[in-house]
Each structure stands twice: as C-alpha cells, then as structure tokens.
Image (cartoon, rainbow, N blue to C red; front, side):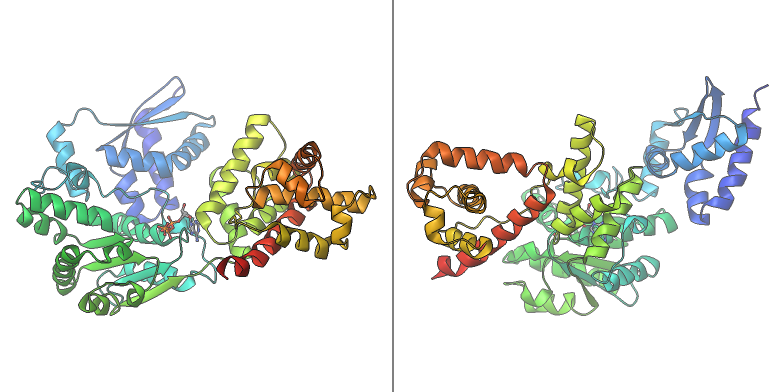
Length: 460
Ligand SMILES: Nc1ncnc2c1ncn2[C@@H]1O[C@H](COP(=O)(O)OP(=O)(O)OP(=O)(O)O)[C@@H](O)[C@H]1O
C-alpha cells in the first residue's frame, strides 16, 4: 500500500533537516510541500518560481535520494509553483526575496534590470576551488558574505580574464540570499550601470535611478575598469558609493587591474576603491587547474581519467574559462563519437590556445634546424633520409600554421619543392597529431619557440 503523502513528506523533512544547513532548510525546504505521489512521480509545490528554480538546481537530487531511501524505490521529482496562489502574492514574494520587480520605481530604468539580480546559480562558494592563486580573494569574499559592510568595504577583486572574479562576487550574493532572503543584492556590470544612467537622464528620472541603486544592501559591480574615461558615470557612481558606504552597505567591485592602474579614474574614486581590501587573483597552478576540472566533472557526474585531467590542465594554463571550454569540447567530442575518454581521443579537439604570432620563414627554419639536428642545406636539399624528411615535413606544417604563405611559396623556402609535396606534408602531420600525443606536445613546443624567435623580429 502506498504511504500517505503527509507521512512521506514529514519523513522527508525530518531527514533533510539533518542533512542541510538551517538557513537552507528553513528557506527552501520548509516552505515547500508535497502535493501528491502518482505513477512514481512525487509532485512538490513551492511558494514562488524562485524557490522552484532553486530547489530544482540545487536540491532535487538530495530530495530524490531521501525519498528513494524512505520508499525503497526511485521516484521522479517534479517541482512546480503552487498555482493556488494569487499572482499578486507571487509578485510580492518575489520582491521580498530580493528580486526587484514592479515594486521599485522603474521610470527611466530598463525593466529587465529590475526583474532579477541575475546571479548565475553555478557561481557559489561550494563550486569554487581554492588554490594558492586565489586563497586571499576567496577568504575575503567569504568574510564579506558573512559580515557585509564591516571590515572589507569595498572589497576590490582584481585579476586577469577568466580567473573567477565574477564567480566569487556572485557567490557573495548567493550566500547573503541564503542567510537573509530579503536582502537586496544588486549585481550589475559597469556597462549596465552606465546604460541605466543614460536611460535615466534621457527619461528625466534620475531620482528613480538614485533610489534604485542606493537601496542596495550589497552592490556587486563587475568590470569596474570600464568606468575609465566616463566622467558622468564616475560622478554618479561616486555618490552611490558614498551613500552605500556611509549606510554600512557592502560594495564589491571586480576589475582586471587594481584601482591605481585604471587610467582616467578620478582620484577620489581611486582612493575610495582602495580603502577596503584589494584582493588579487593570479593564474592557477597545475594542481589547482586539475582540481577545478575534477570538480566540474563531479558536478556533471562524469569520471575523468587522471591522464585526461592532467593533459587538459597542462595545456590550458592562464584562463579558467578556456580550461572549462576545453573540457566541454572534449566531452562533446567523445560523446558524439561514442569514444572512450582517453588522451588520444580528445587531443584532436584540444588545439592548445596558442597566440599566433606572424613568423618569418627564416625564424621557422632556424627553429627546425636547432631542434632536429639537421642543417639548413638538409632542409632545402633532396635527401630522403628519415630524420631529414621528418624535420622537413614538420617545418612545412609549421610554416603553414605560422605564416600566410601559399603552398608554392612554402615549397620555395624548402629549396624549390613542389606545392603538392608541401600539401602532403601538412596533411600527414595534421592526421598524425590527431592520435599522437607526443607529436602534439612537440608541435606546441616548436610553436612556442617560433613565437619567441619572432617577437623581437616583429618589434624591431
Ligand atoms: N577557483 C575556481 N573554481 C572553480 N571554477 C572557477 C574558479 N575560478 C574560475 N572559475 C570558473 O571559470 C569561469 C570564468 O570565471 P569568471 O567569469 O568568474 O572570471 P572573471 O575573472 O570574472 O573573468 P572576466 O575578467 O572575463 O570577467 C567561470 O565558469 C567560473 O565558474
């Protein structure tokens, strides 16, 4: 006989109360209710769309596991908003959950800015891997999330592209929301702030603009370096900043460089941006990159062999967005072709992100000569000795990669070879590099050397 739904749900609540933190349980689970269990599907009602999204993103698996434990068989979980509620109630709730809806003054501000604070649900602390490169920024972000408006105000996160500034910044927002669901967390790019300002000026609604931004409990502003040279935005941001700071509200800023290196930043803003804590994020080391890949894979429920993790982490060094992109490309490739996850199988789609530097034929030839223990005469001559023709083929391939020379012109550089010979060489190396990991490494090293050899040449 089927267990009554009330019994089932109260057992689920009992179990989840033990498993989850109190704020999580109180905020997301206790407010939900089980509606019915039919055809092996448990329907759960939430009071508003945001609670539904949140449960779906973060807790559906946990709920499913607990229900399976209790019932002894797996069930699907279907989470939906309680339609019995009046629409206006939902809207009120949305507003009270920190989502800025129709209740704020909207004149002159683009509507979508006020609908939600648009935090990415993946950018939470639990998904952030801490390494030597970001330890301080992470600790500061956590401190700010726990005690906003206290010590580190503003928190200024800076670091190169794709190193986790936005992730940490938004993690602060999520954390605050979980602890205090009615906080007003505003996440905005500097560009959006400027656009809102321009719209407000155009519609003569500066008052609404100011009230909106100055009502934040936590203001998260991304890419603040783009404020450079925008005098009016700087002026307005200065007053927003002061109002929030004086009221003990937290401001977090992210930038690709520290305040004193943002050209055209007013001195008074520069000193305010520096008066809290400037925490920088460096490029991650190999271990951290591997840990990031492993964590991503765990979330996707994928087992990655260690060699694969090492291989990707070794080749993608300075930008975590690119590292993640490489993993996604590899996963897509092996799943499309139904291949096992091995280094050989993913190598073809993981062309390392080399910055192409236009190189001269001479630079390429001299790198080949140094690296393969052959002479320039060997490369230009007709010897068919294996080592020489191998060096020649690699040289032709690299010349095709690093220059815009046509096939016949490359042939000329190699002592007047026919263009079909060049074409054959390029195709052969392209084929081989799809399965030969050592060759991929060798080509990368040679490319690096060619780049190095070409840079001084270019600037002279
Ligand atoms: N330490 C980390 N652990 C896990 N994921 C990370 C980490 N650092 C960055 N990422 C991931 O890398 C990607 C890029 O991060 P993010 O967008 O935060 O970078 P950013 O520094 O803001 O870049 P940009 O300068 O381009 O704005 C995101 O998907 C993020 O989740």
